[in-house]
Length: 69
Image (cartoon, rainbow, N blue to C red; front, top):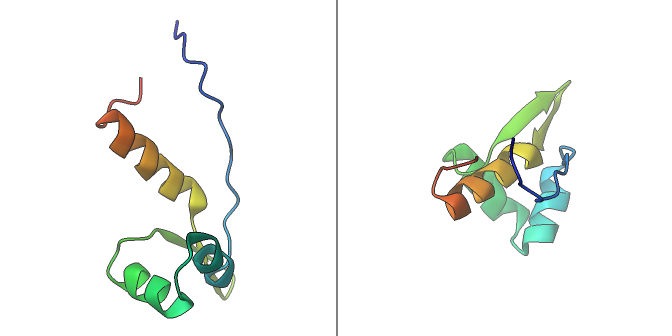
């Protein structure tokens, strides 16, 4: 059994405009990062949204060195 007390949050997908605003970058820069595969997205209907859950998971992996246990 794990003693991990880290809170677990579900992050909803968000528009590229909102994600860029929160990250402090232009939407054009974000779109370039997406096209290069640096930022994860999902397609919902006709819209492409930033997969904030996957982005948060990348951050956790980076800080733990890949060890998520």
